[in-house]
Image (cartoon, rainbow, N blue to C red; front, top):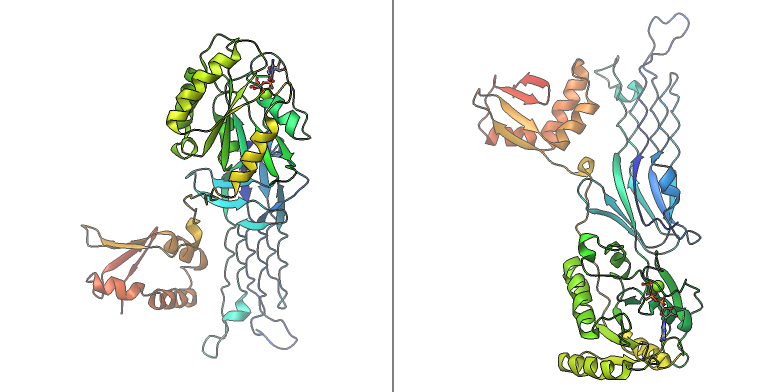
Length: 421
Ligand SMILES: Nc1nc2c(ncn2[C@@H]2O[C@H](COP(=O)(O)OP(=O)(O)OP(=O)(O)O)[C@@H](O)[C@H]2O)c(=O)[nH]1
Ligand SMILES: [Mg+2]
């Protein structure tokens, strides 16, 4: 089975909590603080494995969770970091945030590694908060939760040239004749159910990777037949070879075939429809094909589209076609795929300030969410730290710009406090 899309849940490890602890020594009623720092949560890291060719593994295993960091201990004991979780994927895997469909990572070359979910930082132990004026810090930092999200994995085969066309026109036959690939070939529609790849070793020319995908029919963009999902695999090619059966044995007109397939391409993506395309008129060994070929050629000549006369079954014209394809490949610029990159909420420094009708100043956003996680609002020492961060990050100044005065109320999520300069 060929699985080329999968949706999985990933979660990086949570940071452990810093410890609150005091030394106990003989004859000393209360020793100094000795609560240790906690460990960081493990990251979730994607790595390209050249031995993998499908996303099949992800059909059964949906949840991928990295280890949490350990809590800090007394006597300044550090908590251990959680272990990273390595997820292996085949080359050509695009990792997208499932919610926004934005791209998190584009994994193309073997060995490539990308951290897709960051482990949370471990909290500092109370020993870290001791200062000359604060000798008994009775608080420590909690750990930060690890990033978590649902991601969609999409596998796009990495080929230079793609074969497209109606079912049964001879796409797989071409692949089998010009590469070492052994795709299934048969005289019925939808013989090919999953894409096939092969390498064209162009002697005296440029070698390239050729992809054969399942056939398209009218309405493919609405899911008719096998649909157009497989077009994803030719999205990254530089050139399309549009295979048309000019024998007419299936009762269709080759010119209509050409238009119909291109119409489906446009409905899938304008970019794909605009890709350079050459036509391979196939099955010229069948009587009557020649006439149809001439009509098709006249039609395509007017459009400036290059057409080749071939018979895949008898290996006629394939070498010229492949040499031509290899020859123009380098003249076609590789289009850098443009996608909207995903920036995790947790990594943005974002907040918003506004004044409610009641007069309360509201500060909200991912920055606030994160800050509140680090602060123990019932602890005065921790609150001083909180105030310091608000000052350093410019939030106090922002509040003043919004006209805040001493005694006004500020609300951050569930936490309200009186503003005092
Ligand atoms: N006479 C003749 N038959 C051909 C030629 N090329 C392919 N065929 C036959 O056409 C039928 C379909 O060939 P395939 O290569 O499976 O066609 P396909 O386009 O891959 O079909 P799908 O996978 O169903 O989309 C098979 O019976 C082939 O033997 C040709 O040049 N001449
Ligand atoms: Mg086929």
